[in-house]
Length: 126
Image (cartoon, rainbow, N blue to C red; front, side, top):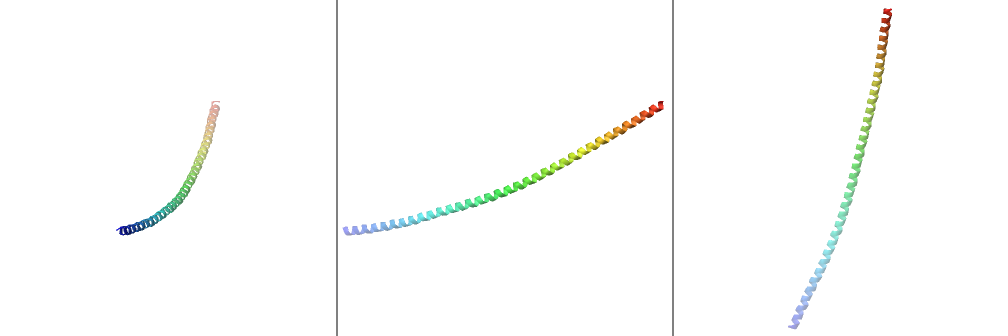
């Protein structure tokens, strides 16, 4: 009976050792798989970050280009408007000068006419 118990204890010990060894092997394998998954995740996150960074740089460059283009259009339009306003001011100024000359000539002619009428009246009254 003692020998039979010793054999059973030895067999049970061997089974427990086999289970423990199997557990350690599986645990080691799971650890390795987990480490591999973590490394892949790091690579994926790094790739995603790099891709996102590249897209942001491209977007920023495009946005900057469009803003500069719009700014140039606005500058051109402002310049055209300034030219138009200057032309209109010059035209108005010339028209005002022409009106002044015309009024001056009219006043001069009117004064000459009145002077002539006065002279004729004076001449008749003599």
